[in-house]
Image (cartoon, rainbow, N blue to C red; front, side):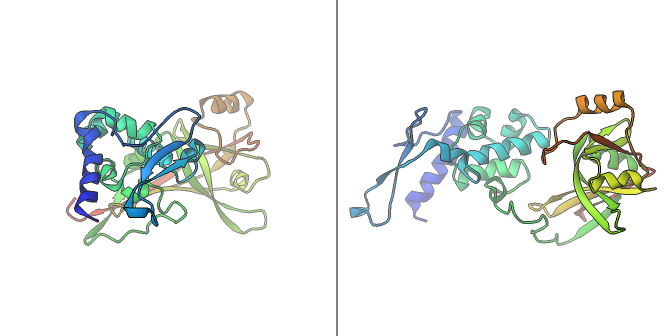
Length: 279
């Protein structure tokens, strides 16, 4: 990269953050319903002159597009229960500029994303959607890791109020199966909904089932897992089932008709976490 190019990236990272306004990009037009046009260098141009490029606005919202960067940034911030002001403070940038990055279909460069990625404990590649089709745990192990047990209270904290976990069941064919489900925590019970006759529904026929959830931080090579074991039952009371449906934080990402609620009452709650040895 030339010194001129490096200077452009640094200006892009600091212009909005320090002065509290969205970065200005010469040649960009953002008019509703019209293409977004930029002046960019193009190979094969005469004399290295910039060539005008126009991208249909709809493409900005496609998967992997710049619009997804802001959505990932906002989603990770909310997951960590951080306000925009708190995140901006950690990233040493203006809250208004962070709002611009989260809400506008912009195309921030690497230098712009380094600070918010660091503030959120993630990577620039992750904010851009890199590795979205890969399993977690692609990073390198810590130099001196420490594996610690979690107390039942710490396990309950990580269960939180809802999320995605995995239920381990035995199918009617006596074959093991582990499937992801959206779950809710209600009165110390783990509940999830599923279609009658589905594989997760087999949990209700078992004496005991296992329910697992985890989180892997590839950027910091840390992670934790929680395992709940206990009996499962179908929620048969119509009023209780309707109440669970009303209280649910989200519908199933898989969609479809999922009217049967299954409740797991953990009799055992264990967990582990990986941290640096000096923590």
